[in-house]
Image (tube, rainbow, N blue to C red):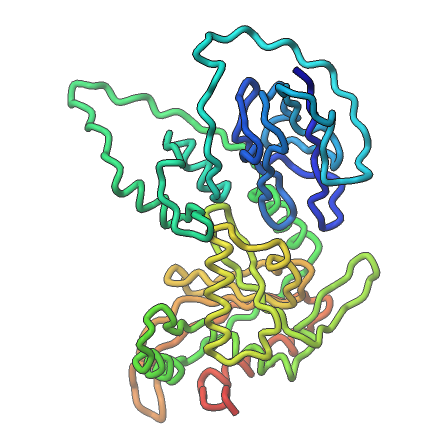
Length: 406
């Protein structure tokens, strides 16, 4: 028997510490090499960590929400053979002294050879849902890359799982208790970033109504000609294309603020952030070099990064580096919203719900499809006139969609 200390490896992005997102093991559990131990949070996503050895967990660094320094002891194991005393992906990680773990209590003979657990590739959100539903993930067929269990796979398995028997009328209903939820992981990061953005940025919000009847007719025409139903165009790539054209005239809106150096960086390339609701919370995957794409290419890339954000297969690099963001609530878009700027950008374009309504056109009352854009800008660096003029340019392009392709 020997003790093995697994230290928190370098997670990149210049991080010196990380928050424990979730544990998938507990003290006393027997794990095999490459079993997933838990997840640690970066500023962009949850990173799963696998066990470097086989052994019994004797100590964990803390509870979900606790902060652990890079290079500090994360998990301590009792192993069967002689292995290196410590392991970390950080070559120069500081050595951490750990108190000797207490001797494990004797276990019945039947526990000496536990069944080897199979590692299931999936997202932390799916693991959490499986844990709450008391579902063994090894029983869920995975259709993702390498057999990864996707959200669709898990939902399909739940649909097929027999429902619990209904409670008889004579059974008293359980008392409804309050539930405390720790603000940890991605939700904590979202909260901190939103607080920082609203505290530091004087937001200027501008709302404009757009007649999208013509662009909707074009979208329907293109979709009718396309036999690939999975590649159907939504309004979002048309808005993205209009934004790309408008930013040529208003480069001050395609910018980020470097607070440490007190400079504004006007970017030549346009890296478009797509605010995406996921089971883990709001993420902003990035469409890189969106200004070089056609409407079909833009639509395909928006679909790809949004799907990857939802099923947690997205990379850390695809969650950073945006220069301006589009956010949409889809069918829940309402009439007006006040989107919060995605630091360190200086502008965000918010999409509201499209509706049909009567309008006066050429002296006649006709039914048209309209949609509001609710956009926010950093008033320190984008003047109100310029913000309004850019949205007016987007309006002009969308109301005369042929100009998008000139």
